[in-house]
Image (cartoon, rainbow, N blue to C red; front, side):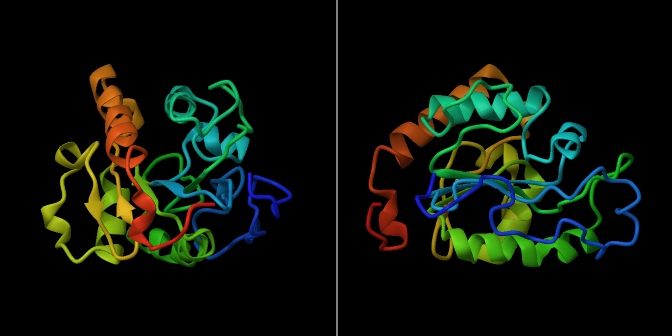
Length: 211
């Protein structure tokens, strides 16, 4: 964890009573802002909180999909806690979402993602990651529009899974939705990150020196 950071949960003190989206304050349990190491070189971005994350208040925790991601982070050396931890002990990685509140009957609307964009943009600017991992097609498309020069139509999450896409100032390493991954998909992602990201000086993307 960053030496100047005093907590992992919502470390930037973002609005936990947000009412920017009319429908969501009544359907959510809580606003789920980012969690993790603010000095992390990796940023994982999902679409919106699951039912479990809405309960725990921590992205990617509390259910089978969250445990899957936590196992992946453990394999990469980014988590030092059990996969079922609801407040994982993370290093070098930050977890967040496009949209911060859960509607129990539908995914976030485009308007809701837009309303939450200042939160995500602020996290990206303050963390300044080298690698962004979009989890699922919605996250990939949203980040691709903002941070690459390619048309959004040129991205397919199945084809992009476990590859590296050059962005403006960092790289995207997309991941299939956690609940859709086969064991082979997960292993392909781990192998790609170990050999093609961690196995080289990915920091040259930003010209930033190692911590």
